[in-house]
Length: 440
Ligand SMILES: Cc1ncc(COP(=O)(O)O)c(C=O)c1O
Figure 1 (cartoon, rainbow, N blue to C red):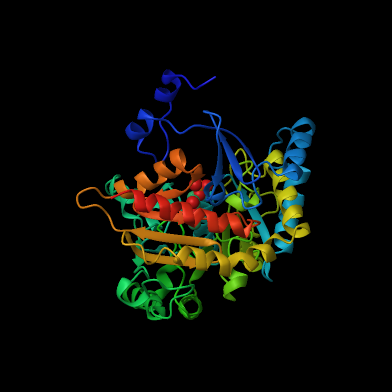
Figure 2 (cartoon, protein in one colour; figure 1 turned 90 degrees about the horizontal axis):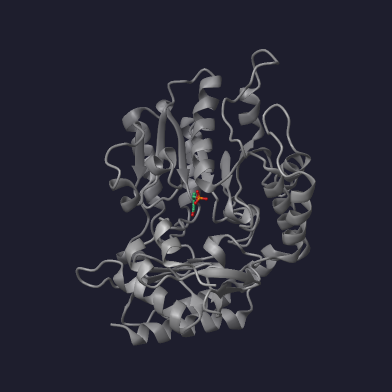
């Protein structure tokens, strides 16, 4: 049975051109492995593995079984002053694969909540140590930390900010982004140029007095703004400046954690250790919404003061550590380990990079970037119709080529499964080329 026009009209879709969509809705009704099923009975290859979420593939049997079992055993448990066994188990499992020193995990339900939680933890940490004057937060242009007020304020994707006027957090500054066509166009992996852009943090520390800055938050590789890998030496430089001024470094690893860039965490891949790591998406393979914020031990310990009966952090969500989400997370971690997913992902990187960059010669392409299994292709925008070309590629891929390709405006984004078949990666870019050849 197809979705009724009334149903289509009732749903206000997120990050979607609703009026355009509703003229010919793209409705997905099922999934297995690397494919979606559509309402009109087709099977579509998913070249974005969900929304950077489902690296292991859809409906992974191990996760399906764990969720089914859990929902029939403990559907929900309060998480304040008592908690489900599964939440504790997952916290231990995640910290066991984390970089050294990360010992505590706080559960949220999404990447946006992880962003706001991490900023609040940073502010609370300084205050607990008697440095409550550290209130300034630093983000980066083109950064994406979700859509809640904290994440939106430190984020730097202009359309996500400007539509809401000035209703943003005060005391926020931004580093410049690292995207630069003159120096870095068509870079493969980390660009050589741009480490000096991290010195923006030093400038802000001098301007405001570094002692007033609480934290800087960056994605190790920017994802949603179009895949911007850090220039060689950039993250190292940020770490140095944070150390110099006592600023906490937050890595938003909502995309980069759990194998997307070939390691459990981007911090491990880059060998640069932040103080706080945010995650979501791959934590449960996208099966049940869940996020988390992981901190170094000393951050947690700073809160552990005052009378023992006192709540140390006045923060949390009804669904923090939800048992069904936690069960999905444990099963996802089991699969990552047993199927050696992170190594699989790493082994696919070169092939992915070569196939992605094979489109560099196309006349409609103005830049190509990649890191790990994250890839972006910039299309030349149509004059006076920004985003139209990207959306047309998405729609043609969906209707004519049976493949889901994500567009963020005129940037095509690729997030193949961590266990992709190499021939499917090749097929993806052959189909994208065919579509690009067919449009103006
Ligand atoms: C780095 C980063 N942070 C935060 C978010 C927001 O996550 P959510 O959509 O789960 O709130 C995203 C989503 O793509 C993200 O990529």
